[in-house]
Image 1 (cartoon, rainbow, N blue to C red):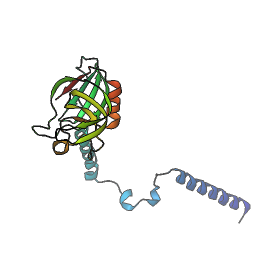
Image 2 (image 1 turned 30 degrees about the vertical axis):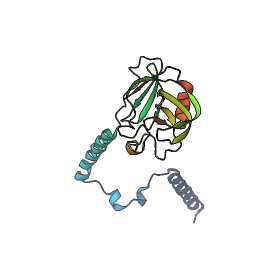
Image 3 (image 1 turned 180 degrees about the horizontal axis):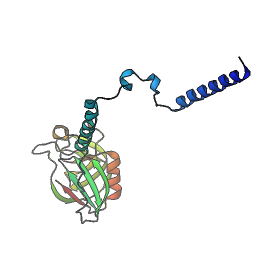
Image 4 (image 1 turned 30 degrees about the horizontal axis):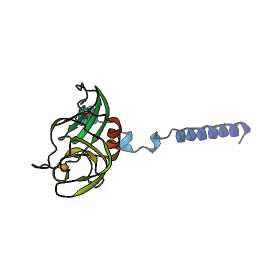
Length: 203
C-alpha cells in the first residue's frame, strides 16, 4: 500500500467518523438506513388525501374542547365591595367595583325546606374570630371565622369537618344547614378584606 493510498484511506476514515458523530448529535432525527421499508416507501394517493382530513378532524375536536369564557361576575357591580354567590355554580366572587379581587369554590345548604341557603341581597353584618356555632338541634361547630350576612342564622364560615371538595354537587345532600362554607384561606381573606356593610348577593 503506497503512502498516498494510506493517506486517502485515513482521510476517508476521519470523514466517516465525523458523519457518525453528526448523526448522533442530531438527536431525534432518524437516518434513512435505520428506517423500515414501509417508512421509506412513498405514500399512496389515499394516504396523502387522508392527512389533511385527519388534520381538519383534530382542529374541529380542539375547537369543540375549547372552554367557553366564564361570565365576568364583577362587570356590572356598582358597589365598592360586593360578595356574589352562585348556588348553581357553588362559587363565590369578591368584587371591588368592576374588579375581581378573589374567587373561590364554596359549599351551600342542603337542598331542603329548612336547609336551603337563602337567596337575595344582604350585607355583611359582623366579623368574628374563633367562635362556636350552635344549631337549633343543639349540635355545635367550632369555626375560626364567622361572617354573618343574615344573622344570627346565616353567614360565611370555614368548615374543617367537611369531607368532600368545595364546589361539589354533593352539597345537595351533604352541604351546610344554610350557611356558605368556604375554604380556610378564602374566608381568612374575606375576613381581612370585607368591611361592614359589604354587599352580598346570593342567587
